[in-house]
Picture 1 (tube, helix red, strand yellow):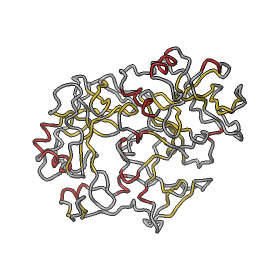
Picture 2: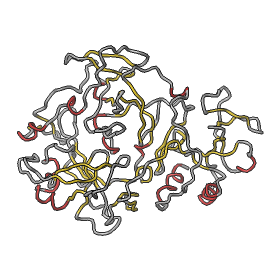
Picture 3: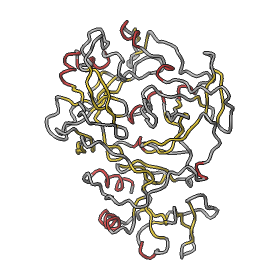
Picture 4: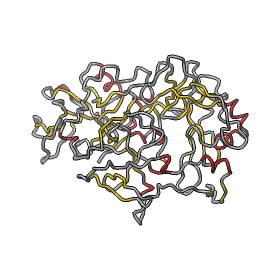
Length: 438
């Protein structure tokens, strides 16, 4: 069943299987009791395309925590330490170059600690911890909290590694939505929808028309289930209990249903998936194109878009793919900086291009690969180019026709690689985009 539902998104056109209606859009109003939690004045609430409501600073900057800090001693590993040596993924030790050391940022430089205001007081799950560096830091559920230098404006969530894995276990601090057990948010191409714990989409229907829905499986509510916010158990004609959301009875596709019958039910608006939060989508400059790795984004010349990912080999595996990081991590992929500069071209933005959701326009170095010392060097020309989740976008000279992804996973050992920008919620292997909550 899960495979069937996933392929709904994989093999359809840009219009998507669900169409444009998706009428049962859920409210993100934070007045609901299901979102209520005691929190200090230093803390705010925001939302993200990837996971919905999350905690921020009072200025709106996204908060993060990391598994690096889960140490037996209780001392956070994200510190101001510099590392002169690392261990290669094959187990060999190496020493960082002078250029790498000069440009290396510490963990706390990349992830500034969330420092309490002078009159801050702990409340609920929010506590204040003392750092060995001599300052205090907010913690949530015992985990120290940070912001990210990748986030330039409120609402950005660029710190969680751009959706291609969380280096160092960095993740946002999600808000518990008070969903019934076994129900969560899943990201699709249209936005965040309600689903089961095994990623089956939930569908909504009028609770008074049970006989219309033969073949559909009711989302059963336990005998002891009680109403909470928009969630209510309702009694079915056969005496069983079924979950409803915003007065819409919830169903799953039945085991004997065909793709055609599911399509028909959605097209006739008999059933609709529940869109909790609509995605902003990509800028008009980009399109979706099917490839052997699923749907990817392309530019107006139908060239696949890529981002560069890099984790250094120091003990805490810090990222090395930010604007200003040593260019040697990029140029090593191609053999020389000059070759890289020819093969990987930044995606230039039009003069009137503006930020759209996770896509932004920033000044990036061009060429970013050519300095032999492994750094950008001085007076490197800058161009106005597109970024995705804070990372510059590139096209690859080895792609010749729409759907080519010949640059996908081109890498240097286990340190760095280029990856195609996939349409999240619409690709074969984007399971990391499913978000379970407390």
